[in-house]
Image (tube, rainbow, N blue to C red; front, side):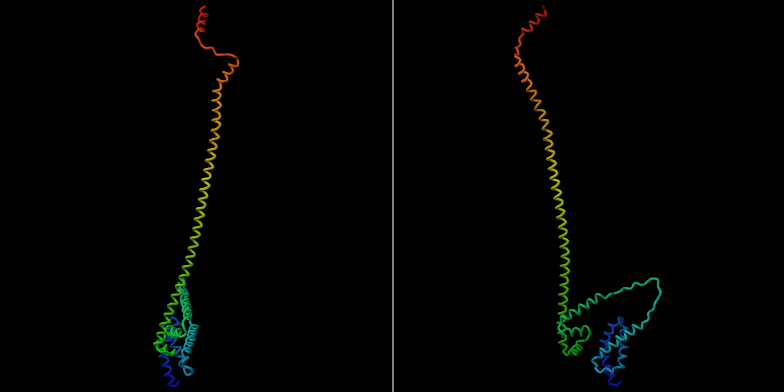
Length: 271
């Protein structure tokens, strides 16, 4: 490799080393492994630096080398099996929250203008500095700062709006469930009151009907007694009238009492 190409490669490494290391960290979780991965990819790229005609594609070439190297390491890994009586408890993180946040971020980025989206991606996704972003997009550093400020404000507003919409939807759903429960409770209460009212009415009607029957029975039982007493009174009152009428029919009259009958009797007894 010519001396000029070596200097160009060294300058490229000094300029893009941090961005390439961040790419390596996304491929492997361990920071030390990420550094080893980047160094291995740089060594492999150094031998073919002359073959890269368009140096603007060097980042893509190096990322492809790192991906291939990571795949080779994964295939060549050694699996050590250790016999044990109890299996260790391994926590498994499904990463659903991270995927949901990533999907939300990719969705709200679509509301930004192309210029704002490019600034946000380069500054916060690729972790490029303001000067590097300005050089990549062909604008001044002040324009990059103002554009980034407006883009972030727009993203915050969109996030707050979506969060508010989500809360309102949850509140409506919860309110609908509570209303349905209250309606069922009210219906059950009304049915219970109706049953109680119906039972009270039936009880009152039964009491009135029983009382009426008892009153009618008392009247009927009292009627023969009164009927029995009236003829007896009439018989006792009519008896003298009948005797008097019979005596009158026979022609007998009652004589008045005088003392001569007693004197005659005494005289006859003495004789």
